[in-house]
Length: 191
Image (cartoon, rainbow, N blue to C red; front, top):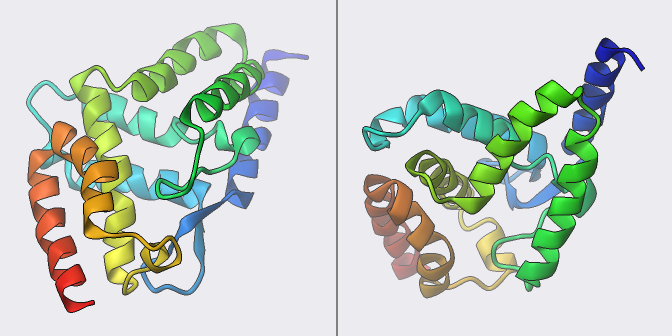
């Protein structure tokens, strides 16, 4: 394969992300969001909410993380945050998927992109923590917009949201958690 053949093969493979359905619905509740839409939406969140990032967050790197972070779902599927998931098994599946998918690329590109995905997964840098916060912030915003969305399906409580997404949002973007927490509390008070 030529270099361009490898690049196109990777891009065609990435197109499969459009077929991976997530638990979260669109804001209008009309259908489930797919993982490609989710990745695009998160990059837009990063651009619009960049003022919520700490001073040492590299927004350009955040954009790269968010466009790459769910590519592994092509093989591993989406694991809903409120689903019953074996975290260790899921991580192992995602690593195998990353090996295959990033392995489609020319070596120099793979050596550039794979570490960005790994940094997001590890969530140890402030940049990755902000990216992870956005990844956890967007679904509640869609659930609130759609009148509960997947929260009803998964029998989610306010405490579950705080435990499973709140800590990651607060770690990377405290202002966003403050915003979300107030709206989530108001939602559950009315329910």
